[in-house]
Image (spheres, rainbow, N blue to C red):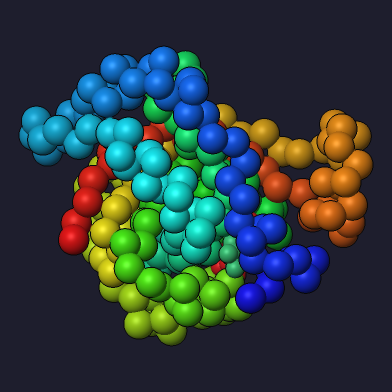
Length: 208
Ligand SMILES: Cc1cc2nc3c(=O)[nH]c(=O)nc-3n(C[C@H](O)[C@H](O)[C@H](O)COP(=O)(O)O)c2cc1C
């Protein structure tokens, strides 16, 4: 299974940072972080279990990032980091600016990460081979969109765990700021840099 620069999947799939130690410190805050549903007082708490499960699946298989709504688009996501910034649970997702998904996140400033709870590796791989610019990937991959609870996009109903995210900050990578030459050579030879989206996890829940 290959991705950009012909790197093996295990290489590509490394999570950027596991903030485990930090999470332990902020465990109370993260576990009891309450989100009030806009339609009522439903609690959709992000727990340590959600966080660890998301990071584990990202590393092993990848997850779906859903953005946009007319129609929604899905992208395979392999990297991410979860931590606690600005007194909020935050996920950092690197998206290359050439992706159609990048345009959708820039437009809407919100998205969902749907984490498979069964083996969807074929769909994840196929999802990487086509772009939402020319295809409706939900249809192509026979995946099922269901409305997200808070953000104005969809979840992949075939997955069991979902993180709804609102972008707080973005940082575009600059070649001259990249200190590690090996990373530069390995991932950015073509200068197709990532933008790091720092997003608040406004809801985390399971559906299956
Ligand atoms: C396992 C795997 C992980 C991936 N992770 C990322 C990622 O973290 N960021 C990114 O920009 N692209 C990533 N990709 C590539 C995109 O999923 C791929 O380019 C996709 O076709 C983009 O779709 P779009 O043009 O509809 O946005 C990954 C691909 C695979 C196979």
